[in-house]
Length: 197
Length: 89
Image 1 (cartoon, rainbow over the protein chains, first blue to last red):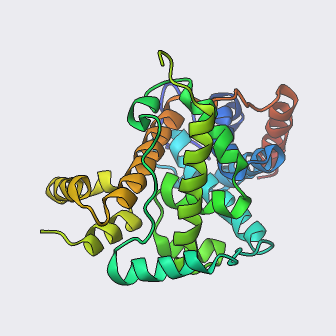
Image 2 (image 1 turned 180 degrees about the vertical axis):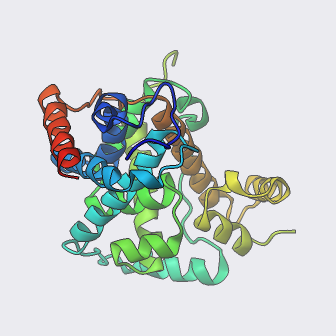
């Protein structure tokens, strides 16, 4: 049944059990970063493998197996987010933010003037020690803020698609991403100290 | 010449690194010099740079910055589920 599928020497596709050792950690990391829940990430990875076995005849070997599996995993992650986002409400207490988003949309002129970074982010991101800080700060965001940031900014998904998954309007997405940027910047500035200063 | 609206919309839409080179260069010049939208859009670009670097690192290493991985017994359980699924099919 599995013959005829292109084989990659480093990644045999004929034995799905080997996927666990070869790309289990990679897929788990991908899921954990997006779901921020160990058990949910592990379950998404398992479901990915089981779904992949069923559609293995559709794998043509043109991409590495881990990327093919990651494509399936993305559906599982988005499914999970869709389910959990229904239980969250967008906090619209701050009417200014929504007004800003509308003004911004109409004119492209932001009324918000964020302060410049206290550190040089361009240098920081090239350093290994920056990433635990980044990941911790990301983990501190509220679920919906984080999900909006992860889908839109980290995964560079279309605005329309993100809005559908999270069941929010484009204005809310703008507000959530603005909040994410502001909070991440504040958190990173508080926890990242570049050496030599 | 790009307007603030065009620049802001382009940046709200997608990672500026994936824009065609000429449009990207024009956008970078506008943001660097613009007194109106520069401050705001520079912050958007910084986060896009950070996100892009994160994606690249994610591809390179199977372990996140905190060393989170699946436990051995979890991997065993997943293997068993796969074995069962392949035996059934």
